[in-house]
Image (cartoon, rainbow, N blue to C red):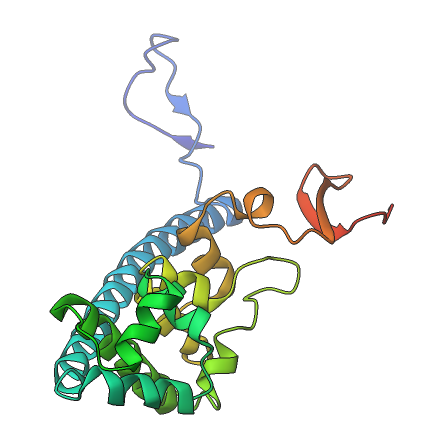
Length: 217
């Protein structure tokens, strides 16, 4: 305790009061946590902004490449897709047309400018995947993103999500994780996109998990 010339507000003429309590280790820790939390939120916002800019740049590159690719005839473009190993049904699915329509284009019959650009965009995507060192991109597009989930990059392309396929191809750079891609495509993927051989369950901590059907913990 130390002498304080000022009277106490509670004891009238009492000339003594408790000294100020110094900052404790707990207070310093809480201050550090607050600082780190602010830094984390600022970094997360910056990461999100950079990721959005990267995605925009990838799509611009895709569109520029598609414009160049569209100069080739549809017959030539389809032959190149076949040389890459694409099945006609997969090409039709990605382009959102029927297999007979694709067969007509292969024979040189009329094709709309929009469909011609769609074919060119798919070829442009293959060019970009090869830059990401994706070998045999046609078969790579058929691989499920996650073993127990019925979702492939071809499904993403059929839904028009070329951006997610490009991000998925760049996961080795930290551009996007499988979980983040699945969450963006379908927040309920754990129930809507489950493979028939798997099921969801609640573990002892109440967290949703995935396991082969018939398995019991």
